[in-house]
Amino acid sequence: MTSATTAGSPVDGLLATASIVLSLLVAAWALVATLRHRAPDRVQLAGLAVLEVTLLALAAVALVALGGGGRPDEPGAFFGYLATLVCLPPLAWVLARMEPTRWGSAIVCAVCLVTPVVVVRLQQTWEVLGG
Amino acid sequence: MVEVRAPQRKRTNAGPGRLLIAVYLLFAIAATSRAGLQIATKFDEAPVAYLLSALAAAIYIVAAVGLARAGAAGRRVALACCAVELAGVLGVGTLSLVDPELFPDETVWSRFGSGYGYIPLVLPVLGLFWLWRTRPARP
Image (cartoon, each protein chain N blue to C red):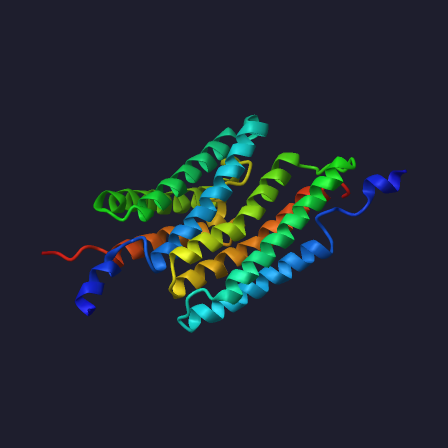
C-alpha cells in the first residue's frame, strides 16, 4: 500500500527525458541556423510542434496521476511550471514566425534552452514529497 | 534599396531586439508567477524579498512592452526600466552578499541573479546596449 504513494513521479520518466533531449536538439539545430544566418526552417518549426506534443502528453500523464491520488509537494509551483511549460513552444513558434531572420532562430534556441530547465524544476516540485 | 532599408535597423522591436523582447518575456513570466505564488502562499516569511520580486516582475513586463512599442515613448520607458533593473540587480546583489539577513528568501536579483544563470545581470546591459545601437540619428 505504501509503495503506491512513493511510486515514481509522473513527471520523471521517458516522456520527461524525451522532452529534454528533444528540446536540446531543437536548440542546437536553431543555434546552427543562427550562426549560418538562417531564418527558422521547417525542421525548427516541426521540432517545436513535436516538443509541444511531448509536453502536452507529459501534462496529461501528470494530471492523470493527480486524479489517481498523487500529490506534488508544492502544488502551486507545480501547476505554475506545468502551465508555463506547455506555453513555451507556442511562444517560440509565434515569435519565430514574426521574425523571419537569423534572430528568429536565436529565439527558438533561447526558448528551447529554457524548456529543459522548466522540466527539471517541474520534477523538483514533485520529488520533494518522496525525499 | 539600402537607403530604404536603413531606417528599419533603428527599430528596437526587430532583429536582435525581438530576441531581447523574447528573453524579457520569459523573465516576466518567471518572475510574475514566482512572485505571485510567494505572495499568495507565504508572504509573511519574507515580505521584502517577495515585494522586490513583484517589482522586478513588473519592470520586466514594462521593459518588454517598451521595447516592443518601437516609438520614442517606448524607448524612454525601456531606457528607464533597464536603468532601474541594472541599479536593482547591482544594489540587491551587493546587499544580499553583504547582509544576507535582509533577504531571507531568494529574489530574482539576489547574488546578482545567480539563481537565474546571471541573466538578470546581463539583460539590462544588453537592453541599454541595444537602445544605444538603435538610437535615432541626430539631425
